[in-house]
Amino acid sequence: MTRPQLEHILRAAAGITGADTFIVVGSQAILGQFPDAPAELTSSIEADVFATRSEADAELIDGSIGEESPFHRTFGYFAHGVGEETSILPEGWKERLVAVRNANTNGTTGLCLEVHDLAAAKLAAGRGKDLAFVQALIRHNMADVTVLRERLAKCPLDEAARPACDRRLRDVVASAQHS
Image (cartoon, rainbow, N blue to C red; front, top):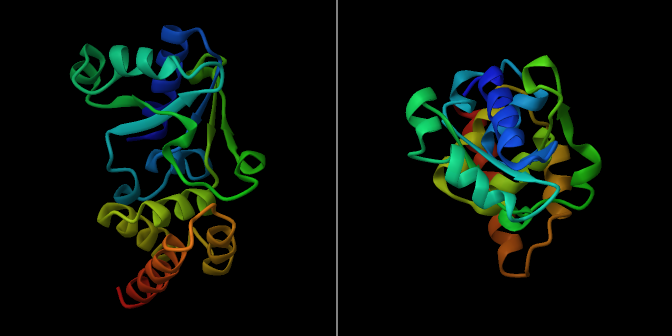
């Protein structure tokens, strides 16, 4: 997905829901801070978004511009309406959101996760594609490992999950340094 495509999704989501502010929590949140991010970080055709106005907007988004919708079939990318609880995020993440608002969003604001908050959420999720994403962030010098470690420590994880996340970070850093 490109930054103009994310902006199109924000504009379309606003048209469907009537909301004017959305949070972008998935991998394509990278486009807020890094509009020209490397292709390996923007390969997803899906943007995970939620409206700050109402949780019910997620269903409108999925139904209108979601996967297999006419929007998706026409443009080749889509939005996934999610909720705030979708991602495990570090304390203070809302204060670090990166705004996307310009003529292409038609006045709609997309608030994208800051890169370290995004990476911490990816480490907490722990899927293979999430770990590859964090590895690429580190390899491209887009995320600082010290800051990432601090953010991960501020994620609301249970006692069983924290060691696993710390181990994932160590493994991702080691892999990034050897690639």
